[in-house]
Image (cartoon, rainbow, N blue to C red; front, side, top):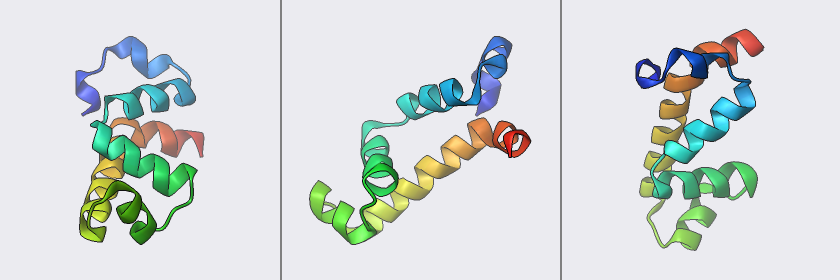
Length: 80
């Protein structure tokens, strides 16, 4: 997915690129990501808060992480 980004974007600090990549996620994926990572909710807690099944939460969370890894994976590896 990073192929769609202009080359200049790859020179931005990782934090800026991460924020931009998160903003490009579908809202439903951003919400799940925020509840799980920022608020520390479990899958079941996030499912209850969003009125979704646990399976839907797991799927959206995995998809969000896959998208972010695809866009930022090589940068994250270099920063580690």
